[in-house]
Image 1: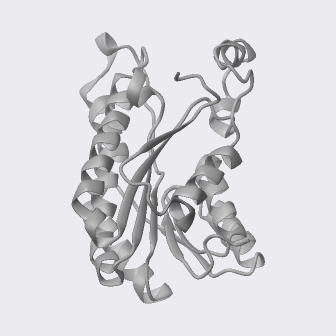
Image 2: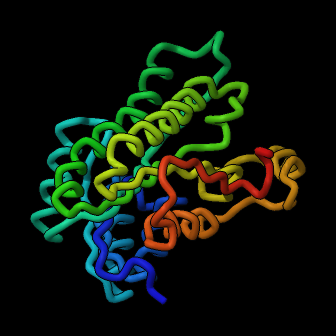
Image 3: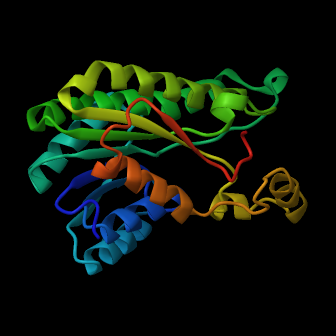
Length: 248
Protein backbone atom coordinates (compact mmCIF):
# COMPACT_ATOMS: atom_id res chain seq x y z
CA UNK A 1 0.00 0.00 0.00
CA UNK A 2 1.33 3.42 -0.98
CA UNK A 3 0.73 5.67 2.01
CA UNK A 4 1.63 8.98 0.31
CA UNK A 5 0.00 8.56 -3.10
CA UNK A 6 -0.67 11.92 -4.83
CA UNK A 7 0.99 13.91 -2.06
CA UNK A 8 3.65 16.57 -2.71
CA UNK A 9 6.52 16.91 -0.24
CA UNK A 10 9.47 19.22 0.30
CA UNK A 11 12.49 17.60 1.96
CA UNK A 12 15.46 19.79 2.86
CA UNK A 13 19.03 18.50 2.75
CA UNK A 14 18.17 15.30 0.89
CA UNK A 15 21.23 14.33 -1.13
CA UNK A 16 22.80 12.13 1.52
CA UNK A 17 22.22 10.29 4.78
CA UNK A 18 18.84 10.50 6.48
CA UNK A 19 17.45 13.05 4.01
CA UNK A 20 18.22 10.80 1.04
CA UNK A 21 16.65 7.85 2.82
CA UNK A 22 13.47 9.86 3.42
CA UNK A 23 13.28 10.99 -0.23
CA UNK A 24 13.58 7.41 -1.50
CA UNK A 25 11.03 6.09 0.98
CA UNK A 26 8.58 8.88 0.09
CA UNK A 27 8.90 8.00 -3.60
CA UNK A 28 8.36 4.33 -2.76
CA UNK A 29 5.06 5.37 -1.17
CA UNK A 30 3.94 7.44 -4.16
CA UNK A 31 4.80 11.01 -3.13
CA UNK A 32 6.12 13.62 -5.53
CA UNK A 33 9.37 14.89 -4.05
CA UNK A 34 10.86 18.38 -4.16
CA UNK A 35 14.19 18.36 -2.35
CA UNK A 36 16.93 20.85 -1.57
CA UNK A 37 20.69 20.64 -1.58
CA UNK A 38 23.54 23.02 -0.81
CA UNK A 39 26.73 21.50 -2.21
CA UNK A 40 26.84 18.74 -4.81
CA UNK A 41 24.72 19.32 -7.92
CA UNK A 42 25.94 15.93 -9.22
CA UNK A 43 24.47 14.12 -6.19
CA UNK A 44 21.25 16.13 -6.59
CA UNK A 45 20.90 15.10 -10.23
CA UNK A 46 21.64 11.48 -9.31
CA UNK A 47 18.90 11.50 -6.66
CA UNK A 48 16.42 13.26 -8.94
CA UNK A 49 17.00 10.64 -11.64
CA UNK A 50 16.61 7.78 -9.15
CA UNK A 51 13.37 9.20 -7.76
CA UNK A 52 11.90 9.68 -11.23
CA UNK A 53 12.81 6.09 -12.10
CA UNK A 54 10.46 5.07 -9.28
CA UNK A 55 7.55 6.61 -11.18
CA UNK A 56 7.09 9.88 -9.27
CA UNK A 57 7.65 13.52 -10.09
CA UNK A 58 10.86 14.81 -8.49
CA UNK A 59 13.07 17.87 -8.68
CA UNK A 60 16.11 19.14 -6.78
CA UNK A 61 16.56 22.81 -5.87
CA UNK A 62 19.74 24.56 -4.79
CA UNK A 63 18.41 26.44 -1.78
CA UNK A 64 19.56 27.60 1.63
CA UNK A 65 16.69 27.02 4.05
CA UNK A 66 18.53 29.09 6.66
CA UNK A 67 17.89 32.16 4.48
CA UNK A 68 14.36 33.53 4.93
CA UNK A 69 13.96 34.86 1.39
CA UNK A 70 15.35 31.66 -0.14
CA UNK A 71 12.87 29.53 1.81
CA UNK A 72 9.98 31.68 0.63
CA UNK A 73 11.22 31.52 -2.97
CA UNK A 74 11.56 27.73 -2.69
CA UNK A 75 7.94 27.24 -1.67
CA UNK A 76 6.75 29.53 -4.48
CA UNK A 77 8.71 27.67 -7.15
CA UNK A 78 7.63 24.27 -5.81
CA UNK A 79 4.01 25.40 -5.99
CA UNK A 80 4.60 26.52 -9.58
CA UNK A 81 6.31 23.24 -10.52
CA UNK A 82 4.15 20.76 -8.58
CA UNK A 83 0.84 22.63 -8.19
CA UNK A 84 0.37 22.12 -4.46
CA UNK A 85 2.11 21.18 -1.20
CA UNK A 86 1.11 18.71 1.51
CA UNK A 87 4.23 17.73 3.48
CA UNK A 88 7.36 19.52 4.65
CA UNK A 89 10.30 17.62 6.14
CA UNK A 90 12.76 20.01 7.78
CA UNK A 91 15.84 17.82 7.69
CA UNK A 92 18.75 20.15 6.80
CA UNK A 93 21.29 20.60 9.57
CA UNK A 94 24.95 20.94 10.48
CA UNK A 95 27.23 20.25 13.43
CA UNK A 96 30.13 22.33 14.70
CA UNK A 97 31.09 20.44 17.81
CA UNK A 98 33.40 21.61 20.58
CA UNK A 99 33.48 22.09 24.31
CA UNK A 100 31.70 25.26 25.38
CA UNK A 101 34.85 26.85 26.80
CA UNK A 102 36.41 26.67 23.33
CA UNK A 103 33.27 27.21 21.24
CA UNK A 104 33.31 30.39 19.19
CA UNK A 105 30.34 32.68 18.69
CA UNK A 106 30.38 31.76 15.00
CA UNK A 107 30.17 28.04 15.83
CA UNK A 108 27.16 28.65 18.03
CA UNK A 109 25.36 31.10 15.75
CA UNK A 110 25.83 29.11 12.53
CA UNK A 111 24.39 25.92 14.04
CA UNK A 112 21.39 27.74 15.53
CA UNK A 113 20.84 29.57 12.25
CA UNK A 114 21.09 26.52 9.99
CA UNK A 115 19.32 24.00 12.24
CA UNK A 116 16.66 26.07 13.98
CA UNK A 117 15.98 29.23 12.01
CA UNK A 118 15.66 27.16 8.82
CA UNK A 119 12.71 25.33 10.40
CA UNK A 120 11.02 28.66 11.15
CA UNK A 121 11.72 29.93 7.63
CA UNK A 122 10.30 27.00 5.70
CA UNK A 123 7.39 26.39 8.06
CA UNK A 124 6.32 30.03 7.79
CA UNK A 125 6.58 29.93 4.00
CA UNK A 126 4.57 26.71 3.71
CA UNK A 127 1.68 27.70 5.97
CA UNK A 128 -0.36 29.54 3.31
CA UNK A 129 -0.67 26.70 0.79
CA UNK A 130 -1.43 24.24 3.59
CA UNK A 131 -4.13 26.55 4.96
CA UNK A 132 -5.60 26.73 1.46
CA UNK A 133 -5.66 22.92 1.31
CA UNK A 134 -6.85 22.63 4.91
CA UNK A 135 -4.31 19.85 5.10
CA UNK A 136 -0.64 19.54 5.94
CA UNK A 137 2.04 17.69 7.85
CA UNK A 138 5.29 19.17 9.11
CA UNK A 139 7.98 16.72 10.24
CA UNK A 140 11.02 18.33 11.85
CA UNK A 141 14.27 16.47 12.42
CA UNK A 142 15.42 16.78 16.01
CA UNK A 143 17.82 14.46 17.88
CA UNK A 144 17.90 12.55 21.14
CA UNK A 145 20.47 15.10 22.33
CA UNK A 146 17.74 17.75 22.14
CA UNK A 147 16.27 16.11 25.23
CA UNK A 148 19.38 14.77 26.94
CA UNK A 149 22.09 17.25 25.98
CA UNK A 150 25.57 16.09 25.01
CA UNK A 151 29.04 17.23 26.04
CA UNK A 152 30.69 19.06 23.17
CA UNK A 153 27.39 19.78 21.46
CA UNK A 154 25.84 22.66 23.40
CA UNK A 155 25.03 24.47 20.14
CA UNK A 156 23.61 21.41 18.39
CA UNK A 157 21.58 20.26 21.42
CA UNK A 158 20.18 23.77 21.88
CA UNK A 159 19.11 23.90 18.23
CA UNK A 160 17.35 20.54 18.49
CA UNK A 161 15.64 21.42 21.78
CA UNK A 162 14.45 24.61 20.10
CA UNK A 163 13.04 22.58 17.21
CA UNK A 164 11.02 20.48 19.62
CA UNK A 165 9.50 23.54 21.33
CA UNK A 166 8.79 25.12 17.96
CA UNK A 167 7.17 21.91 16.69
CA UNK A 168 4.79 21.73 19.65
CA UNK A 169 3.85 25.40 19.34
CA UNK A 170 3.02 25.04 15.63
CA UNK A 171 0.91 21.97 16.45
CA UNK A 172 -1.18 24.05 18.84
CA UNK A 173 -1.57 26.94 16.41
CA UNK A 174 -2.47 24.96 13.28
CA UNK A 175 -4.09 21.77 14.55
CA UNK A 176 -7.60 23.19 14.15
CA UNK A 177 -6.88 23.67 10.42
CA UNK A 178 -5.96 19.99 9.96
CA UNK A 179 -2.27 20.84 9.79
CA UNK A 180 -0.10 18.67 12.01
CA UNK A 181 3.41 19.28 13.32
CA UNK A 182 5.61 16.54 14.76
CA UNK A 183 9.31 15.85 15.25
CA UNK A 184 11.58 12.85 14.88
CA UNK A 185 14.51 12.45 17.29
CA UNK A 186 17.02 9.99 15.85
CA UNK A 187 19.69 8.39 17.97
CA UNK A 188 22.92 6.95 16.55
CA UNK A 189 22.19 6.52 12.83
CA UNK A 190 24.84 5.01 10.58
CA UNK A 191 25.38 7.41 7.68
CA UNK A 192 28.29 8.82 5.66
CA UNK A 193 28.89 11.21 8.57
CA UNK A 194 29.16 8.53 11.26
CA UNK A 195 31.23 6.34 8.93
CA UNK A 196 34.05 8.84 9.48
CA UNK A 197 34.13 8.07 13.20
CA UNK A 198 36.71 5.60 14.45
CA UNK A 199 35.63 2.04 15.29
CA UNK A 200 36.26 2.72 18.98
CA UNK A 201 33.89 5.69 19.01
CA UNK A 202 31.19 3.75 17.15
CA UNK A 203 31.54 0.76 19.47
CA UNK A 204 31.12 3.02 22.52
CA UNK A 205 27.91 4.48 21.07
CA UNK A 206 26.50 1.08 20.15
CA UNK A 207 27.31 -0.36 23.59
CA UNK A 208 24.91 2.20 25.08
CA UNK A 209 22.04 1.20 22.79
CA UNK A 210 19.76 -1.56 24.16
CA UNK A 211 19.28 -2.99 20.64
CA UNK A 212 23.09 -3.15 20.23
CA UNK A 213 23.17 -1.66 16.75
CA UNK A 214 23.09 1.71 15.11
CA UNK A 215 20.02 2.77 13.22
CA UNK A 216 19.78 3.14 9.45
CA UNK A 217 18.42 6.01 7.35
CA UNK A 218 15.57 3.65 6.43
CA UNK A 219 14.65 3.24 10.12
CA UNK A 220 14.19 7.01 10.34
CA UNK A 221 12.50 7.27 6.94
CA UNK A 222 9.85 4.72 7.92
CA UNK A 223 8.94 6.82 10.94
CA UNK A 224 8.77 9.97 8.79
CA UNK A 225 6.42 8.24 6.32
CA UNK A 226 4.19 7.29 9.23
CA UNK A 227 4.01 10.87 10.51
CA UNK A 228 3.45 12.22 7.00
CA UNK A 229 0.61 9.82 6.22
CA UNK A 230 -2.98 9.38 7.34
CA UNK A 231 -1.81 6.50 9.52
CA UNK A 232 -0.94 9.21 12.07
CA UNK A 233 -3.94 11.45 11.47
CA UNK A 234 -4.51 12.04 15.20
CA UNK A 235 -0.87 12.46 16.17
CA UNK A 236 0.13 16.10 16.61
CA UNK A 237 2.77 17.97 18.60
CA UNK A 238 4.79 14.85 19.42
CA UNK A 239 8.48 13.95 19.38
CA UNK A 240 9.08 10.37 18.23
CA UNK A 241 12.44 8.93 19.27
CA UNK A 242 14.01 6.57 16.73
CA UNK A 243 16.98 5.44 18.76
CA UNK A 244 16.86 1.74 19.62
CA UNK A 245 16.04 2.63 23.23
CA UNK A 246 19.14 4.69 23.97
CA UNK A 247 17.14 7.66 25.30
CA UNK A 248 14.92 5.77 27.76
